[in-house]
Length: 227
Image (tube, rainbow, N blue to C red; front, side, top):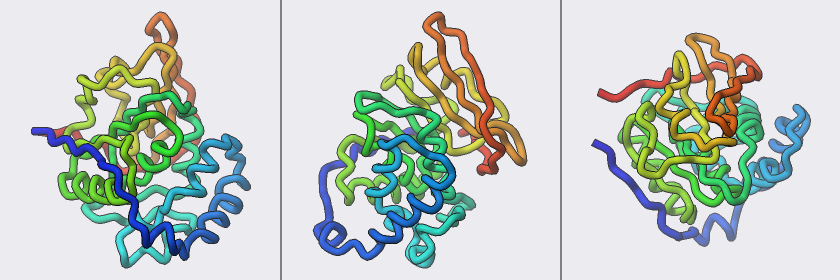
């Protein structure tokens, strides 16, 4: 059974009044992301202003802006900052877009996207992560993010079609259910395969056919179907 969480507007005054990680965040973007060739200004600005440390469990918060993934519990991770930036640039989000994310995890990718696009719909199969991410996003005021606990293989049919779809867990192959929920002219980015996967960009042509292009090898947790 799916549960949907609408994220209300509430911004903690403490975060905005005292952001001790601001310089670390700017350094992260300069040294890890721009230095590796990410050029989309919308993505760079979103990465500079999204408080990654607040999506990381407290024991790892001091490492939030380092150049590697971190555990978030339940066998899951928050991706390396560069990989988040690369996937976001590849999916090419636009301000008027509606984006669907499969694999909410910590909520960080959804937060980055939410600073660029009109609406983000994000689904997470692990109940505890879905609830925790929804709480963090709500507290930080992301009123254009909608979260759901459920099976990403089924997509979010009542909100489809989407301009962009991004997967943060790896299926053996991209489910047809998801490409069916992608608008003509839209893009889908996903790690695909088992073990070391390939980051793949799929574009849906106006006639409904799909064009696929491989990017870099990556390693993500497997995408798990529901019961």
